[in-house]
Image 1 (cartoon, protein in one colour):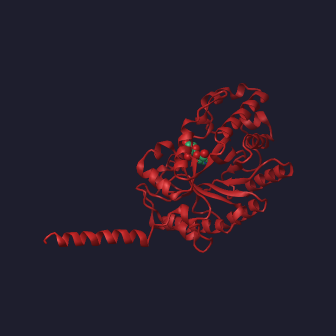
Image 2 (cartoon, helix red, strand yellow):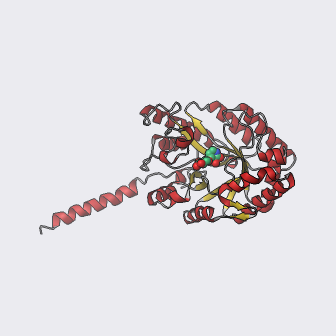
Image 3 (cartoon, rainbow, N blue to C red):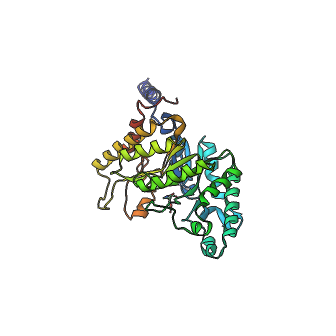
Length: 353
Ligand code: XIL
């Protein structure tokens, strides 16, 4: 008899837990957006339970933050190490996620052996090596990686022409086009992107990229989309953003917001994310998602965050300060920026489920 109150309150508690779970399931980015929502990940972090759980439940697309770059894959001349990249693929397969490949060619993060030898190669030798690299990697991931950043950041920072990289010096002005052709030959189904930073903020850079795209399209060089990296600050111009999206989509290309992070500590003086900055991030995130959502379906590729938690961000090292630029805090708590993403979706799309 004395046990009865205990069991009845236990029962009540169970009913409350179950009905609460049924009444108000927490929205997940991957199920409320009608375009893929991605995140850049590392195999080390995916091995941590809480991290893996959040990545698996919230996101429908993954980019390897580093391990599909030449520095990790390109072990030696015509020798490739796919082990770390493969582990990201395995995770994605287990969680029904697509993978965007990043990146086949980049002037940064080359393997040490290549940095040491690149100057000694003649043009033909380097071209053959690079072609074999691109085709081996794309073929290895055929059917697993649906899209690639073929060449990353080939345009000069100032935006007024090609970056003066070793690739450009040795292979000439048209090397980006040939890299696209090599990738297409290796996997006719993989979507091919050109990816760069400050495309929205720097009108000169946008112009140069659009001229390159126009030239590719006139010559039938394959290109399916543009990756706008979106390493941005709170001063980001929505007018320029809208303009860039219009220019890219009017060329029948897909738009990938490929590396989103929003710096909240530009002068490095804050020792914590202020409520004011957090709310500004929220509003900016909402505006970005709202404008992106209004693109025609065929032009939307994905929005990908460049990391999961503030504490995972590359910007801490890159800028020398915490920037709190991502949708989750270090304890996997959803920040106002996460809510902003949901707000940007509201009323702008038909839901997936
Ligand atoms: C960054 C990674 O986040 C860092 O971990 C790494 O040390 C350097 O590269 N543009 C790109 C990304 O295209 O590949 C860069 O990623 C960030 C800038």
